[in-house]
Length: 456
Image 1 (spheres, rainbow, N blue to C red):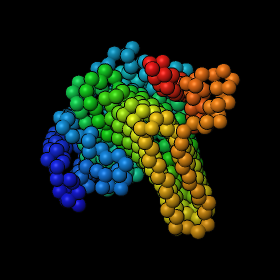
Image 2 (cartoon, rainbow, N blue to C red; image 1 turned 45 degrees about the vertical axis):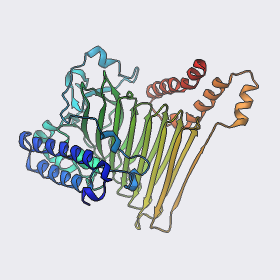
Image 3 (cartoon, one colour; image 1 turned 135 degrees about the horizontal axis):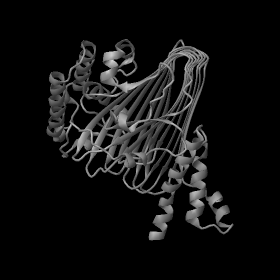
Image 4 (tube, helix red, strand yellow; image 1 turned 90 degrees about the vertical axis):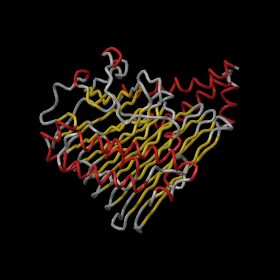
């Protein structure tokens, strides 16, 4: 659709200016960045797709509750973000204590080998950047890159595919049990307002196991940063993957985070998205169950305050029979913050014996807080068990009264009830050190009510 037909007149100039910035950056990369023909063709098609789609706005059904247009208005930004040097001691502040993990550090999406600790990897495991992967592991890279992330599905996905200059490549060969969790430490920083595109490609072959903990932190960020990140994950037959994402960026951090997963027969994929920071966050999680007896569990928790915005979009695509999916997302919203849950389960005609469940539960702690919850089922098979539901409300008066009658102050009683509300999501964190770490972060966020009460 032409851009002028999908853009309000009053915003046309700003949108054209920003698309011109993207076009200039694309031409610069095309002319200066050495690539193979395979990647050049994908980049070109991706940018053409972006131009056809344009920047999303509220007329786009997938962005009706959260238009990203305002992120780009009247704020000059740069697409060329340098890899800043960060002191090793500063970086170690973002490591999770007692996780006993293999640590992989990226700074603005670029692999920082000197700050990482992946020297002794299991046999055949590869961790490198895209430039090395393209040269030394081209067969694997070309088989999987952009295979699960259809650029025609989303404008920001297309833009990332066109503009991401480098990325992180992880390959786990068949029959490999990665005993230590892999901690991906993503540090984001900029000296001037910027639009950053980062990319990961993770391939787990048949009968292998991998636990991934991915954290996003902003470091010394005095300006506005928009991060557009994409992670592709291929899960082989009989493979088991745990994938945890912890987002705790600062008030200048804005993040569009897309994860695209392809599962093969008898595979198991668990994911948990915890969002506890950032100004404007959009999480797109797309999982395709491509063969029989796949199982996937999606869990999420977000706590918002002030004017924060968190948008969780999930799409679970049941393509083959005898597969199972479970989704549980919870939100706690303070002040004038906004939350969105838009979850869709697709059951295709061949996906008989599907068992799918989806739940979104939210607590509003302010008259000005807003939640938009839209669970969806689209079913084309007749022998399935599928259900979905959503609930939004305040803390239960009876439970609050019970705690108050035991001599507990109102703010403390509210905190206890809110912490209990998060418990079933936190219990899905199977790594004990990670669970302890996240519990500490959640407790800190829940102090917001106590601190506000003390201030009054």
